[in-house]
Length: 193
Image 1 (spheres, rainbow, N blue to C red):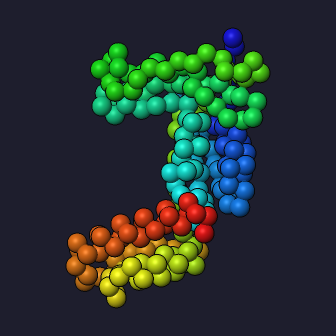
Image 2 (image 1 turned 90 degrees about the vertical axis):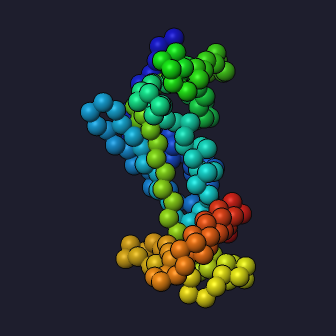
């Protein structure tokens, strides 16, 4: 069976369609980059679903894997199903080279699928939060006992926000509450708030 090469831009188009179907209320920015030796896709969104949910969808469109234990990149071929989803067709793995990535192989799962090679070796994700969303998180943390003046909302010029430690706060307390802020961000986003 012939392998169809999909450029990073074509891969980005497939990812955009999948995200629109999975999270219709969230606006995603999906951009592709091509460079010598490969390509990548960057996915960015504000508020919306938790990063782990988005990563579970877009990660399957990565045409490569990297084994940092032996500094080796491998290429993976996929089955592109008619509905736009993908499955690994063949992954040579790195265990034969003393790495940790296991080899994978799946036979054609659907008679109408195509064997593809994604030009985007990696898919990167970046979720940001809005000031309004940061306010919701801070309100929840205060109800949970956040000490006054431990964290603050950092409002950025580009319309994004972050929850950061105030200067002069006990480091261990601040780290605890920063972790709690991250937990709350994920809870809110999973619930679709």
